[in-house]
Image (cartoon, rainbow, N blue to C red; front, side, top):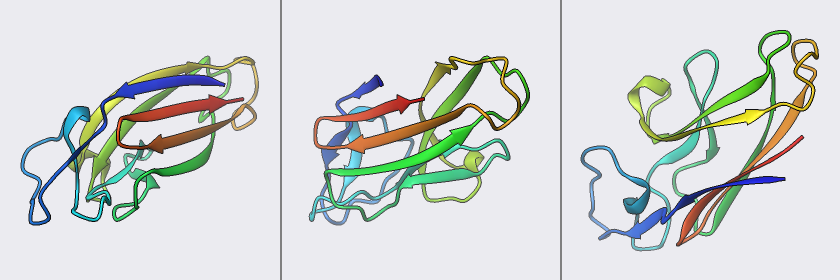
Length: 131
């Protein structure tokens, strides 16, 4: 398991807070009941937000998704973490990018399978990868 840590992920916001501008990892807004105001997920290959932690999730929250390669002999998976309210990835805010090297880069399309675990608590957003 490879932990990829995004420090200081959540900051409390007033219950009437309307997010304006792109949030940073140090100020991802939550409501007064300590629930996320945005969907958090990955940009998929077809430019859609693949939601892992849905908005309204109580903190601490976590989610998982099984990823595969999209082309043969792909050496790594490029992950872009996003948050927002829109279906199209382009309409959401980027939180960060990570690259995960595959152990078997010569495998056929769809064969390397990687389990991605995303957890969010009051201090950090943690991304773990298992092959």
